[in-house]
Length: 495
Image (cartoon, rainbow, N blue to C red; front, side, top):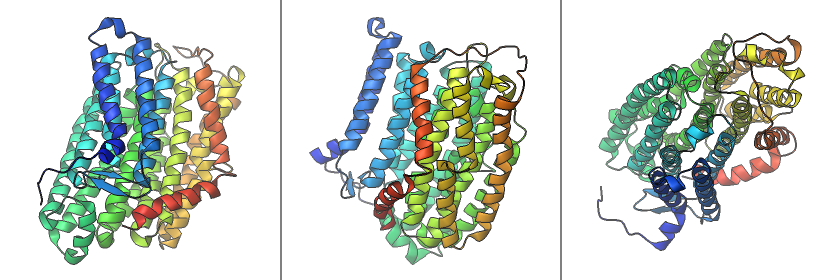
């Protein structure tokens, strides 16, 4: 392995500008917590939004026409990198704006919390823009450790700290497995770069260390993605975290891990798919069934959505299996479309939950929603649209995204996975429709801490746009968007 000091050019600084802006923003936010004159809630919020928008503009304007590796492969540019960075930054901006209108805004918009938040996002950007296994690991840990802290420190209660500890312990175990897998791959191939692993692995497909490395890497990423049976941290962490942080974990973490899994298993380890694909198929099946079955008995909305996210991770794993078995750009585009749809639906759903919560009731249950349509018909209509979309009902993006994923799986002759996915989706109809029935067809239930949400232009705008996109992406936009995603996916499918 060549350890010579890499050449740093102006092009690298331009390409890495989103990460650099976030790092500078994190340092500035930390200084805000020291100097009280510039550390007010409004000042912290303003700086955070400016930094995130600046990073987004830098990501949009970065050169991406040709995939280019800088720092000996430690930093990668291209269409897939731009897709990941733009998606993550848009999610981060929307969640920040939603936080501004919640009861937790004074606790979230503090210098140290804002600094952690920006470092988490910077770690995610590093992870989706790296082809080197070490840099992937550094980006993953930078984002993960920050998330542990955000979960337990933003609103420190016994419940949130317990959830943070569970997330930390199981996350550390997953990190050890992932690092061990990377170590085995390096020991067998002598390189950390995925492009070089692509060339070397076919020549040593029977090497035990290569096979074990692939399996350990898959298990480590499965933990982070909350695939069953490695999902035990997710329900407690989702329920215990402030809802905005839950939204971040449910959306951005999945975007980050899926993009990395595509690069590792669709690129570097695609030549030995017969080694890791049976195990991933098993994880997908368990996730689709267990996630949906466990969601049936949940009363907490956040806990129900946690088990729902486990099932959706299973659907995304089906697309990764299709990538390994089929190849080509269509499975890549299918999983990217699924990610976009899932992120929009999740942000809309969690946005409504953030609006409903208050300091007396920070965990919305089905009882809280009973009869709510009479008081808040617009919010209930929007939440009903999101529930239909989660369930995969037409004419929403949930239906068309599952159609693309299952179509890719059928082309890859993974018929059994499609059948189980349809069964899982059928099970999910019960608990998604139960939410709608409670809102529109049930009488209000007396609860200890009633909901008293205030009118919010921010929430109305975010949720309204999400509803429109959910419908448009399920009706008139699938063709143009898929064409764009297929052209984007050509880059990674070619490797």
